[in-house]
Image 1 (cartoon, one colour):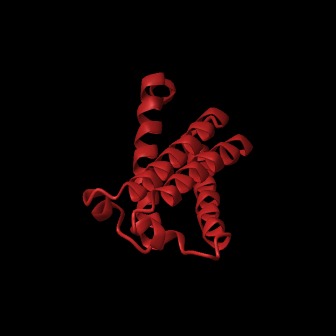
Image 2 (cartoon, helix red, strand yellow):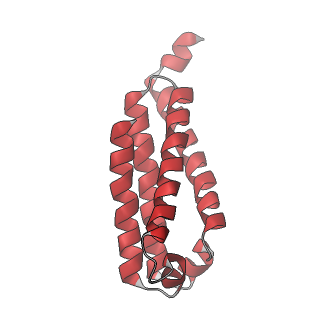
Length: 134
């Protein structure tokens, strides 16, 4: 049975499954902390929300990419991916705190694409820093 789990295709399927499930769970958590409904806003054509959500998806996947490269087991990969997600979420709150002149969520909900783009870049940039440190 050990050779089954050591098969590259089985490991790839396991990593893929865990990451897809994690993206769904983590996006749900992001949905709870934002003041707008991601998929409702995207359905309306809100590009700022689409960019911010896309950055989050890329950021989560990128953290897991680093995690897969650094760990030998799915369990270790999940642990460091969860830690990375927590740091990414913390980065979201810091971004909100560092912009006292306006509220990030309100601007993104109003389709302020400049704020959505900066949100995307912050998520992607932080994911590289977080991933490299895993």
